[in-house]
Length: 514
Image (tube, rainbow, N blue to C red; front, side):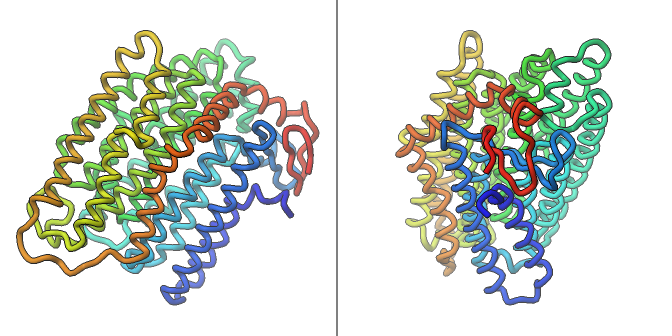
């Protein structure tokens, strides 16, 4: 049965979601136990797949469903990049669900079922080797996120959720149009097969492919919240329930993953690749600049964290635009750090809000925190990490990115990254001063941090020192991932006839069947 484990990141949350939604009359305790167990199982499976991707110098796994051969059947594809995204999603999800089990899940209905459904969509998007199924898993993710966004109700949350739904429906419409254009030009939606056909095209067909590719990049830029398509994110993330906002930290990275995948596999070494890189470069730099201004202007901690997410998006996209192996390796090292720390900050913001009464997370004087030493310590670690200060991983990730920039790119990237870090440092220092030093108005609230909440936050915060302690192996992995992405012909050759046919229930690993 070991050959089927590549399907488990999709099957575990799918079956779990069905069970949780069908038996929603079970006690809160039972649902929490099942949801937590499902997330733990996903961490273990993702860790196993990561180990498989590392073994043998970086193996690529392909799993054909229903014995339908590529390019006509549905193929799951696991390489170093998808394995990295799977483990990152699983770790973030476990921290979020632990925090939610303290009571946030009980403020609405079907929280855990929807949570697992969203994980199914995310994992499926990271594993699929087919563009249409990428669209399907995108829609599953968005469907669950619509409901999770409005979990618990409230005027502000419903208003932000409505804008989120409308904008993403427009993005989905553009996505299906882009797929129609690409299918009309290439006659396929399998990523490897499309890459082979795109490389042979010229004239009008090449122009159609370029149009479809640029439409895809617009859609993925919307998902990633890249300027000028990011204005929906601050209000949406600030209004979402804390565990949901923490999980949403991976949603922008789904857009980044899709861009990396299509740029490195389908459109590598084509004229459209240069246009994509130019768009990502200037949009990424502009996102860093304007998000830095938003960080300084924020008057609420949740909004502040949302703009920090946007700073990380701009940083990652600018690194993607550089295109070199060193740059891709650097941004993949920075990606887990910024995702997990921003997720932890949303959870910390909720803990602060619980002990400040009506002031919530607004940067105004309010009640003194009941557990100010505990919350202050966690806030300090998260602030140092998100601002990119030594000795935590944010500083190393940014240093690797700046080192990877060459020539005139340094003149743009270095100042913006350093200024964005300064903006984050100033904003987080101001927030910490208000919450822990200047808030003495009124009586101290009696609320306390519960064990599940503390476990969820510490689980995510642990990534900051661990990514430094294991910087050598992690950076080696991300560098090897970048090198694997730079060789798309290996995927094309393996999947399309130059290797033995994939068969149902069998796993092909670099040309060998198990």
